[in-house]
Every structure is written in structure tokens, then in C-alpha cells.
Length: 414
Image 1 (cartoon, helix red, strand yellow):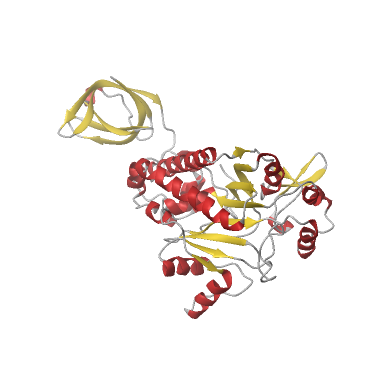
Image 2 (image 1 turned 45 degrees about the vertical axis):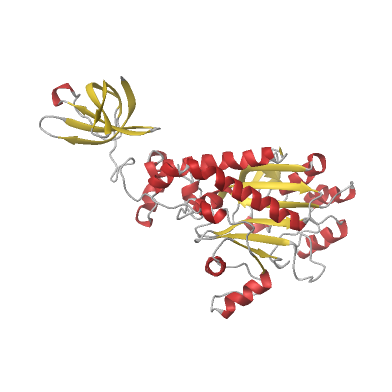
């Protein structure tokens, strides 16, 4: 047989050399006599092994008749990329991130990337099964959801624009054609944050549904989350083993998730000595407290208009609040996603734009015009793909859920 792969480790005795050879499917031991091995065998070299596959006890190995070095290694790293060590640990963060192009081949990184691939596939499958049409929204945009200091600006054809923060503007256009639309693509935030849930560049799962009530949106999103978890359970055994974790799939199946209004959530946190104040986003500590209190993921509903985006409808029963809700993940997952009932009245939208200091920005004219051309009630959801993966697979940071992380304050390399 012929085996193609990379050397994960080399062990030598007087009579035999033992090579752990790894490819995309895993690793296997190749045993070769020293007089049949080429000089200079070392970790990370790519090799071609020819030999006989044999069963030793309960373990398969290759009795090698010859080994050919395909690609040599010019620089040794310690620890080595394929070495078994906690590459997600804070001790190695800087080292691993500076050499991400090489540590991509680490078993834990590969496991996280497999989890990402499976999760994204499961999300797309759910959208397909529920009659959603994919709309590929632009990355360059003249409009931001939040203030300009949170945007990343670029100049194109002499025009100052931004890298997208939220493709929902464009999905609101498409939803009036297809009724159910979604997009999975990159988003960019320039706001400073070093929490385990934030990146400068991340992937957003966004969807809009026409003729949908706020209440119906809860059920749709819970269906998606539980469906994704159910699909991942039988496919993630090896991934969990490599990561050394117990995924929270069972937590994701506990639908419907409990709900608590934002005002009550703040009061509950304050009652138990957890810092929280009306008009401010809930901290990670507050989010963790709430999920521990409910022993499950939990919705925090009706967030203040002062902290929510301008397209979201104001509550009739309390004008300080909006028809929005954030889903907090259990086991330290933090905020994973948000849903919102969208404003359909142009006057209300213009009021909210004035509140956010955007009333004189001509870039929003087309967005306002959507309200004048047969608009309908519609709701949206926005979910950070890396946040979902971090929660489901209990990763320590969202940077471990993306191939090449772009983090706050870190030089972009590689």
C-alpha cells in the first residue's frame, strides 16, 4: 500500500523507527528498519510510505518497506504544529496566532474547523428545508447599523464607504420579493472589544421573514438551533474527542427556551449582586448568571431603544423598549444571536434615524424608500456563526472558530 501524509512524530530504537503519519483522516503508525529509512526524518515533513498494512493487537499499523521525503522542513517550531498540546490555551495564544498558517494542521484546530464546516452545512440545510432563498449581499456599503466609530471605512471610486456591519438592509429589500431570505457572509466591526465573543472580522448568519410576527420569530429561530444541534450530535464524536470537551448539544435541544424581559433581567441581576443597569448591554457575567439561574439558554426580550439599532420597532406598551430579543447561550456561551421586529412605518423609521444622528445621511434614502413601496410586517435574525460554534463546542474564544482570526488590536498576519 501507499500512504501519503505528514510526520507527526518520530521515535527511534536500535532496531526500528516509529513514525506517526497524519493525513486529513487521522494518523497511523508506520514502522521501518533504520537501514531502510532516509536520512534526516523529522516532524512535519511530508512523506510517501510504501509498505503493508497489518493489525498489531487492536491497532492498525504500516510495516514500511520504504519512506520517501516529499517536502522537507526548514524551520522547527516548539511546540510543533501537529504536537499534542493545548494550542487554545492563553500561554500559546500569541505564538499560535503568529504562526496560524502552520498551526492550521494541529489536530485541535482541525477539529474546530470540522465543527465549523458541519455547523455551517446544518444551518444552510435548515434554510433550504424551510423555503429560504439565499441572497448574496454586498460587502461594500454606504450605510451602517451603528455609529461611524464602529465601522471600518474604505474609499472606492472616490466614494467613502464601509465594510458591511449588517446585510439586513439588503435582505429587507429582497424579503419583499422572496418572503424568506438569508445570507451567510463576513461582517466587520471596528469597535474596541477584547471579550471572548468579539472579532474584527466574523461571519454573520442573517435572515428576514415577511408576514412574520415577533412571536413567530422565536419559534423559527429555536427550530433552527435545535435542528443544527440534532444534526451535529452523531457527527461530532471525533471532534469532541480531539477538542477534549463535552459539547452542549443537549442544551440546544431544550426548546422552547425560557424568556425574561430586559427590565426583569436587570432587576434579577441587581438582586443577586451582579452588575447590571438599565440602558446598558448585559455583561458576560450577567449573561452567565442568567443562564445559570434558568439552567438553560435564555431569551432576554424587549431591549431598550437607547442601545438597539434604528430599524427595530418601538414597543407600544413601553416606548423605552423595542421588539427585540437576544439569546444567551448556557455554559458561558454569552449572547449568540438576536431577533427583531422591523419598523414598517416611514415616520417611525425617520424618528429612529434622528435619535441615532443619521437623519441627514443620504445613504439611507433607499432604505427609507422601502417603506413607501408595499412594505409588509417582517422580522429578522442575526447570529454570529463563530459565537454559535464557540457555544456548541465549548471553545474558549471565537477566534478558535474561524480559520484566520482578525482580532482587536492585533496586526493582520498571516
